[in-house]
Amino acid sequence: MPSIPESIRSLKDYSYPQFLKDLMAGGIVGIVALPLAMAFAIASGVPPERGLFTAVIAGFLISALGGSRVQIGGPTGAFVVIVYGIVARYGVDGLTICTVLAGILLMVLGLARFGAAIKFIPYPVVTGFTSGIAVIIFSSQIKDLLGLSMGAVPAPFLAKWGAYAASLGSATTAAVGVSLGSLAILILWPKVSRMVPAPIVAILAASAAVSWLGLPVETIGSRRSARGPSARPSATG
Image 1 (cartoon, rainbow, N blue to C red):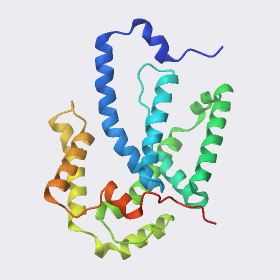
Image 2: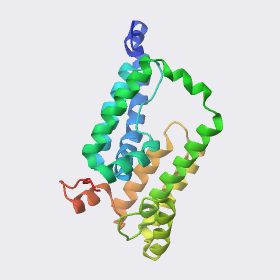
Image 3: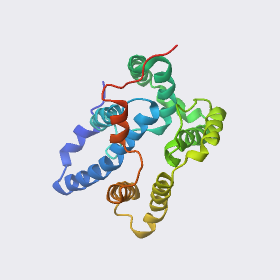
């Protein structure tokens, strides 16, 4: 017999104070997760609204059907590399097919109780995989971090950094300043307060600085306007 989702079972003793705490937690997570989802979508080679669709739909399903009373579901950076490769080679339609197939495989693995196999995977493998993904994602963001004027960023790691080095002279002071300011807030804000997450402060402060000071940096809106509303990756090769 399939188990009842925790979201249903928890309603038996759910209280108004718990609702207020959940509402506050959901608002904070939403403010952080939605811009993050758009950033992951852009890094994956698809329009930013695709990230919003993924965050909203997947987040709801995880919360509604999950087996934990306390959990957060949202976008993950580990899939940026995988999604980018699929979109670059097969387009968005190919990504849709891969997503459906992955969902089917996950359901089969779940029904077969294969999740317990994770305990046999060595810990260094998990940490090494996660660290490698972090390096790859960081590498994919250098163009926007420095505001480089260059064409499409090569997919291979060494070729990517070679292209960055060749375009380093096009870095803009405004982009570097916003990037360093955001990083400083992320590092220092937890020492000031932990009630408001640092990513929220960084997003609001950077957006306000760019708007009020008129800094010449790209925004999600300006990039979408330049590409056009109908711009979308196409399958190649």
